Length: 150
Image (cartoon, rainbow, N blue to C red; front, side, top):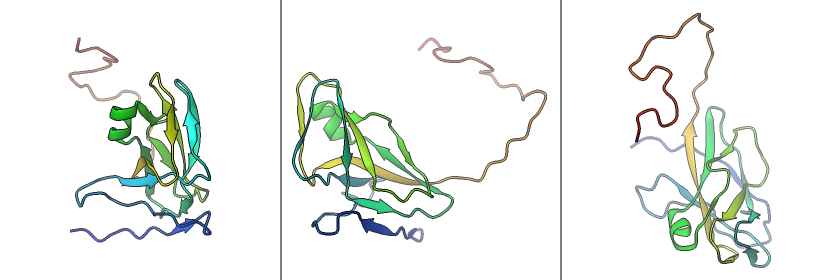
């Protein structure tokens, strides 16, 4: 098992009792993010709402956070993360907020401390582009969207 990456977390609303991101099973890649709202928020069909989580994190350099939808919320209520995955950069120190979109035909009500999304932490390699005259050949070549006919 690898050594855990320590990520400082600060409650942006310390006066409130609020769960921090956590894995729901030992093998889960994502840590659930919880809504931190004063009153329920209704998301109308085909509309979005920006929902606060009540915490900010300090990712170490070389890491990013990806905010992704929860499959249960998508399947049961047709609610997902609009800009999925949303990126949290290592130099961002503001509150994590989630753009939830209601893809369904019925309003959806978000409650305080409801699990609204998941956060996946990943390493980001340092990259340097090298300009070349030509790229190596592959079987796919420049074939783009739908090029395989599937």
